[in-house]
Image (cartoon, rainbow, N blue to C red; front, side, top):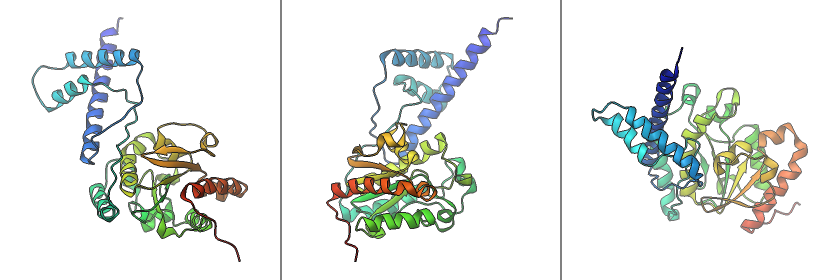
Length: 286
């Protein structure tokens, strides 16, 4: 039996679903106020294949006009691969405007139900610290203590992070702290791709608003979502990178350092790199 027609119909249906998801994603970014996007160069062969797929999907659709059909046609005009990472443009606000901008962003997030993580959360964990901080720390997601209090890094890992900040000659209230996802993943698991894709635009907006000079990514998940690249953590460490105009430095997550204290000396080397960029000196021990 020849099942080619059914296979073709299924492929077309999948393409339409993907295009509809892309349109909803772009509208979501637009609702956040993100209208400028950048993407890595797509090979010409892939662009041509995507264009052919999009055209075939539109041709297969019924002709009556409607919102859904219009969305598919819009997607066909400029097809983009589903793996493309979109990064918002950097908008620098005056320091006096940053607290209100963060409050507005928190209001936009609201009682979020955009991904499945909301079902198990106690409190949404937005961010904490100085809205005009020169230094920002980015972690993976809230744990049990953070979920209970609604504040990032308040458990054992948070206590260690506080010590790391103090060792740099700073106080916690002088820096800004946020996570890739704002709701606790079940069992503290790594955020899944759809969860990170849904929540990371809020993190990018936080970075835009705070406009730090240096961002320290705490662990693999943080640097992956900040850069759109998945590489071993040690491939990132020891050198400067960039994110939204800030210098990006990568180190271990405090939770990992609690499991393997031998790595603390290497994390201190990473923090010293951040200190050099900020012109900080470690406080003298009495």
